[in-house]
Length: 374
Image 1 (cartoon, rainbow, N blue to C red):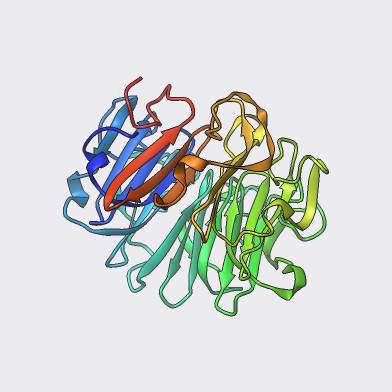
Image 2: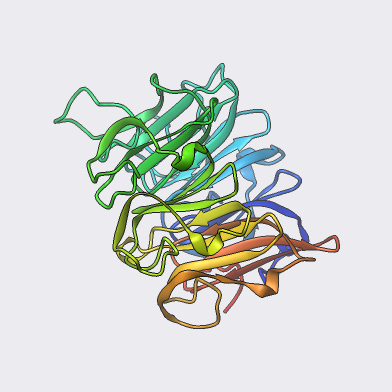
C-alpha cells in the first residue's frame, strides 16, 4: 500500500517514468514521489528523492488538472482549463520552454498554445506530445529517431526542437509516446505510428526508421482503440477488445510464449482471446529496454507478463519474466482498478473497493518509487 496523505484520496490516473511517479486525484490535485535528481518531482527541492507522495503546490496551487504524463525524467500535465505545464529534465528541449535548462518547478508552456486548449499530453524518454480539442497534435524534444513526426531542416544542427510544433500531416484525438517513437489515433479511427523501428516496433512490416507518420495496419480491418508504447515494443487493443503485440519479444513482452524474438506486424495475443481487454500499459525504460505489462479486461480481471527480474510483475517471485499473461487474483472484483502504470522496474495501480480508495505498488524501492518507506 502506498503511504501518506494520498492513501486517503481517490486517484483517477497514475503515470510512471524512469524512477518517479505522478498521480492525479479525483479533485484534480497532483502528487509525486520517487527520484528527483533532475527536478522531475516538480517540488522545487534539491532532495534526491521522496519516499512518500508529496503534493505539488507553488505556482500551480489551486489549479485543477485533467491529464498527466511522466517521461524518462520529466513530466507534462494539462489543466482542466487546457493549459500545459512541464518540469524536470530538459536537455533535449522536452519541456517545450525554448531552452535546455532543467526545471525544478512546474513551468507553463505558453508558446504555440496561446489559443489552443490542450486535452491530452504524452511523454517519451526525451520528447513530449500534446493534443488540442480540435485535433491538432504538437510534438517537441528529441528527434533523433524521427519521433517528432517531421524532418528537421538542418541535418548537422541539433536533433531536437525546443518549442511545441504542430504536425501538419495528421490530426487526432489521442497521442502516445514511447521511448523513441510516437503514435496517434485520428478522428476516423485509424492509428498512425513513427520513430525508431530497429525491432519492428512500428508494426508496419520492416525495421526501418520512419520520420513521418505511417498508417498502423489494422488486423482484420478492425481499428485500434488504444495503444501502449514501450521502448522496443507496442501493445494495442482494437475496438473488439482483442489485444495485439509487436516489436521486441526477447523477454516475452508480447505474451506469446517466446514464439519469436520479434514481431514486425501486430500479432494476436491468443491467451487473452476470450477476454475483452479495455486498458493496457507497458514499461520500457528497463535494462536493455525490456518491459513488463499490465492489462485490464472489461470484467475487471488484471493480467501481467514480461520482464520480472525485480518483481515488477507482482507475482511474488524474481525471474527473467513470464512470456504468457498471468492473472493477479488479488485485484479481482469487487475491487475496481481505476488506473495503472508501469515504470522502469515498478508497477502501480489505483483501486477502489466499496467506496474505499487505495493505491498499490510493487518492484524495487531504492529511490522511493513505491511511495512507501522501506
